[in-house]
Image (cartoon, rainbow, N blue to C red; front, side, top):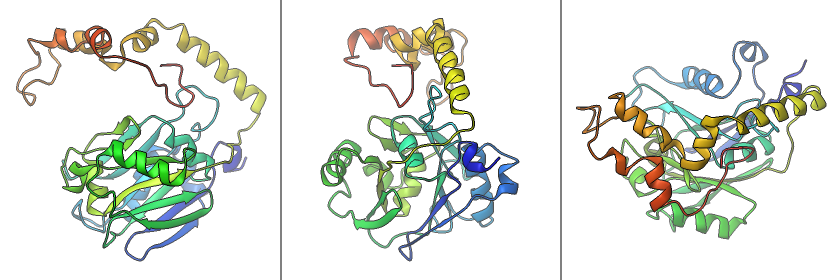
Length: 295
């Protein structure tokens, strides 16, 4: 069975910010027998491309966007994408994940991974329109917030483009800065700062393809069963009603709530931060991710 029959696009986009050159390559079939894509694929490219003891802010530190074989299919919760690089916060392996609509768009554009190399001399945006890839200057949005940057990029390229952007904190190389797709973020490990060091303000991406799977009818039936199981789950219902913060009370009671920079495990005002309190006082609307029954 070919990789494309297993949910992969069998294509990696390689982007060199220093030389402003782009190329594509196929996945290594021997490597793909050992992993499932996503985190595994990102870890493979980071290991393969990294130099020992390279600084996270060095142009030699690669940055990898990855998706998995289920991304872009009818499987529930399969719209996420991941980022893998060397963390400026820990100086070790960083992997972080994000929902929204960028993941399946990357897959629809035909890519299992986007490997970012080098560093640009000036702020740039990478524009990927299916097989067409180009760079555009980003001096006009350098310094803008993530919300304003997203608005401007979608206004410039069109609402059918998905974006990932960094904000002022990442531009200033804050080791806790994230990467945003609309309201959602890959926030772990300071991934945003790595893109800031590369002067990559963001990516505007459009994909109009589809994802091929073996036995589509059988796959859709299995996906529907999984979807129904999720919708009938009490835990998923709590996620629908109160978001991820529905577990805050339990975590606090267990003494595992990071408080005062992990000096303590309980916070005396945690009742003001629970999912119930949040949804009652601040929640105005729900925005679901691609293919996700949790919204």
